[in-house]
Length: 124
Image (cartoon, rainbow, N blue to C red; front, side, top):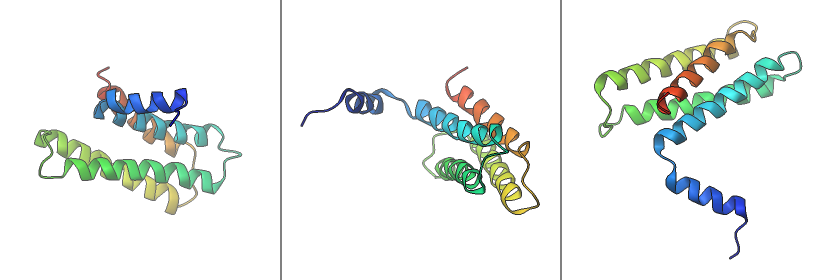
């Protein structure tokens, strides 16, 4: 079967990309989605806001689930920090979606958090 260049690249990227690099890329994707909604706040729809927040929430749910597994190799302190950050993300998301009128500024902390964690995963 003939592959396009993009398909071949994606297959290779999956092999050479480390889990940390993948996590970093996903956090940056979530941050970009949230930032886009924030930047286009006046024209963004409730569905776009909900979609960006849902992607971010699901990502953090996966992180929290992974670090709380018994076989997670991370130190206890790191596990606890990730779990705490995840709970913060869940609370912020709930607050934005269900408590009062959402404000663009509420997305800033989620964008910054994702970018900082992504940078840390990349070793910056």
